Structure formats: C-alpha cells, structure tokens
Length: 302
Image 1 (cartoon, rainbow, N blue to C red):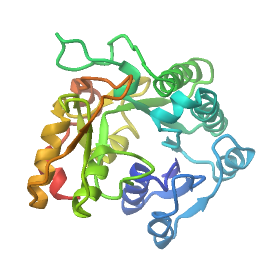
Image 2 (cartoon, helix red, strand yellow; image 1 turned 90 degrees about the vertical axis):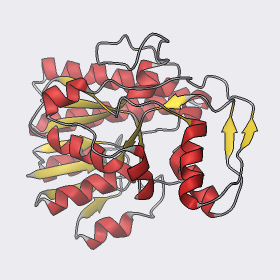
Image 3 (spheres, rainbow, N blue to C red; image 1 turned 30 degrees about the vertical axis):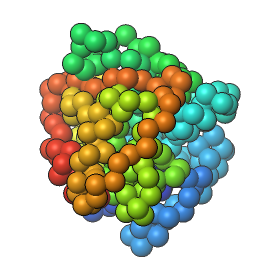
Image 4 (spheres, rainbow, N blue to C red; image 1 turned 30 degrees about the horizontal axis):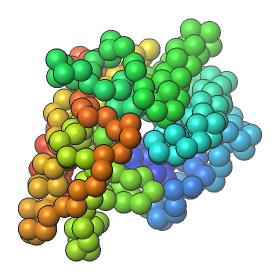
C-alpha cells in the first residue's frame, strides 16, 4: 500500500513510519520539521522520502497529488496546549486549516484518511462519577487546542458525507515512549525521565494528584495499523482506561532510575485538567485493538 504520513518525523509519526516500512508499505513523509530534526536520520536510513513542507502549503498538497496514496495518516499538528492559549489564531490556522487542506488532498486522490485527535483535550474534565470518557461523551474542550481538534473531527464527518472520503479518527490519550522530546513535545514522562537521568529536580504543579491515561507508543501504532481497514466513519478512543496520578508516575520513574530524590512542588497551572481517562471498549469492538503494555513495562522500555 502507498501511504502518506504527515508529521512522520515526529515522536509518534516516526514510530508509525518505521512500522509501515517494516510491513512492506511504500511511504512518503510530509513534515515541516518544526519540532526538530533529531529523528530525520531514522526515516532517511530506511530510504523513505521526506517532503519538508507545511501541511497548509500548496507543496504538501501537490506532493500528495503526485504520490497518489491509498491512505493518509494525519499526525502533523500544533500540539502545545499552552501555545494554543497564547495564540489561538495560530493554533486554528495549523490544526483546522491544515487538516482541511489534508482532507481535501486525500479526497482528491481517493485516499483513506486516518485522523489524529486528542482524547484529553477534546473531552475536557472527567466527571467525578465517571471512570472514563467514551466516544458518546459530550465534548467540552477547555483550550483552543481541544477546540481545534474537535473541529477536525467535524470536518472529517463533513468530508465523509459530501466527498465520500473513508476516515477514522483516533482520539489519543497521553502517549509516551522512546524518542519523545522532553522539550518540544513536553510529555511529562519524557520530561521526568530526562531530568531524573541528569539528576535535576522534577517539578510537579499543584498537589500532583491530577491523573492522566498513559498509553505506550507501540500500542498506539498498532491502533493506526488496525484503522487501515476497520472503523470507517468512527471516532475511536486509544488509551488504557487506567488513571495514574502525577505523583505516582514520578514515584515509579524514580524507583526505576534508583533515586530517592523528591520532586519540587509549584503552584497549579491555570486551566489544567484534574482527571483524564478514556474508555477504550469501542476500540476493541471496532478495531480489534486493546492496549498491551502496562505502564510499568512501558517505562522500562524508555
């Protein structure tokens, strides 16, 4: 199969690109490399072409038209929640208009569109009486980033209805794993890991009891591959359904590294969600996918 991966030089995208190549697919990566070039050699060493282009550009659309993929995995995004708050217009420009350009390019060549959404940012705060958001939960995004990701969901449905595009939208929990940038992508697992290895203090904002649903990148790649031929027209949560607090995450990572250093607590950041977890029963039913990697095992793989 011929497949385009936007954001294929990123954390998740590079793992997905590697797996697609290993399974014999012909790949084109489109990435403006705004998050850095540290993973470019991984892609180039596989002999995969990288088009260095913004997803909003005519160059990106023309590359898709020329390559004529059968599937387009859309991972490129503005993904910094704090930047979205500071500059919501930029966030919307990349995440809404960029997604529209990629949807249009996919529709023009008849490619299946596998969209990347955000389970935590899109659904908002998990109610006290709930164990996890399912796909029927009413979205309540609390940041421009969550709003732009929700808009992308709606545009996928529009293109499905009016352009006949086949799509699946994967609403991801907090993805972690090897290659995650402790600076640009700001995943807390990567941040803690780097600081612990460098014997630097780790900062926890608030009381540290806020929870997240941490899903291993290898399991997420399995979900993308499952979506190649299943789940048409669906939004599907990809997580574990397990809540882990920040203080518990820190304790597990400190124990693995063998340090008794205590974290530094600073005031809670405004607008931060207290609880996030995703119900992934639809993923099992529709994609035949379940998470395989417990957090303790995933942390040992970093």
